[in-house]
Image (cartoon, rainbow, N blue to C red; front, side):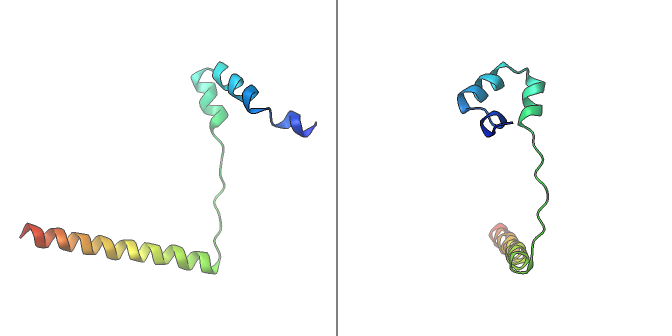
Length: 69
């Protein structure tokens, strides 16, 4: 199989997608993205963002509580 046969041209692809029924279109567009396994620095960034989010939620909740009093 040639590489050009594996991925049709964008014009051909849009014509094919427009001719599909709704259920077929959903199935054609759906593709699985595997879970990514993060390493040291990436995990540190993700956990830092999680902690920052929790801290900011606490700050906002406190500000709303103070404003409501």
